[in-house]
Image (tube, rainbow, N blue to C red; front, side):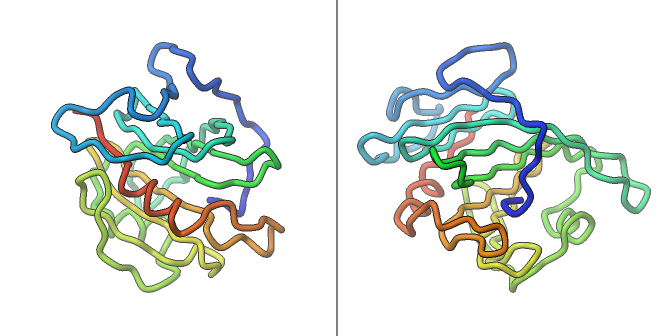
Length: 191
């Protein structure tokens, strides 16, 4: 969630390799098996998360930190654990926020959203990383912050891209519409 920035963040150093930890690589250095390479703009890098098995292109100048969380119990379902990856500008403005949560009840995207967050806008069918997704154009407080919900394996992911700014938090836009397209088109799951 872009509007709520947690205090317990842990810095993840791009380019470091640790057991089951995310790493960053330079653009074009790896292409997942079976994936069509996507041209990433000059100067961009690719952030690779080996735990959930995905990679995402990122514009230059962003730092990445990770925050762990546990979702509240809902409807008698197992309590999911997750983590949020924050990609911030040098000024601390969230540009990309990617939440990766365990999905122990194997909920569909629609079941997940209706259980944990609710729809804010009018959801649209979407695709990312070769997976079916749902795009909700509004965040939970009705700001025009696109949220893309999608599943892969045992995870449910929520990707938010700050292309419009977040007025109540005082955050300006951190990405352009072109950046949005490059990020979505370049997102890949590793097989």
